[in-house]
Image (cartoon, rainbow, N blue to C red):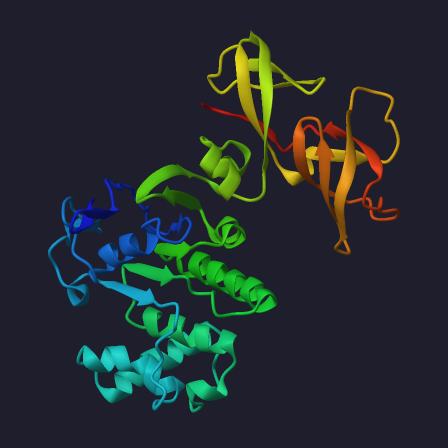
Length: 342
């Protein structure tokens, strides 16, 4: 599908499918087109070209009210003058349900998401996480064919975000909901998704499972955007079937060739792909100097300056943390290193 505003394409030839009971995340930086894509599915925007199908039905030209979708907004959009029960039962009442039936449906969904007993509270009397759950209950009460989330956790603090995203994932799997989920937070996307669609400049950059995207990025953009990665210059020195012998600043490593030929190549090295040695490990290693070392309790984050560039590494050895300016040696681990296709 395509969505243009004048001469500007906000969504440019985007096409994908979400299977029943699947949670698919649209992930990308601000302005990449992910929220516009979600609004096109919801019927809040109309496609300039292309079609949108939900459950085998062409809904391209239908209004939002006729699409059998519900949306959880970034701001939650709860009615401040209504209590929790009234907020959740509002949708069924608008669709013609009796007050008793609407409240019965609302009670059922509130119990399902763990808010039973809070029906009479106003939104202002709830925590951020509770407000988010009310917004989910209000969307679920209509039993939509597709549930849409637009940056649902952006207003929560880090610890609460982690807890609520687990709640959303558990609820989605328990009820077998079909979900399209928008976020710019890579960790959030990796945690909740069956499949991730990475978007860049109004187009799809790559589609895959969380592990597939993290371990085998198809481009430098995806490698850099999904989690942290150090992009380094290397060289493919030989090929053997689907494997490549890669040289990096004196180190050699065998990696899946991913279609590359002999010659210069770029590698994406995840933070856990490096190992930091405070003394010469007695095997090929890259000499470096600690530019920054941050102790974070369960691990140490390092920025190390080397002849091959600046490396960002995470090391679980926290007993002795080298100070800034200390000479260290760097090797590559078996995991967290991948060639990036041209």
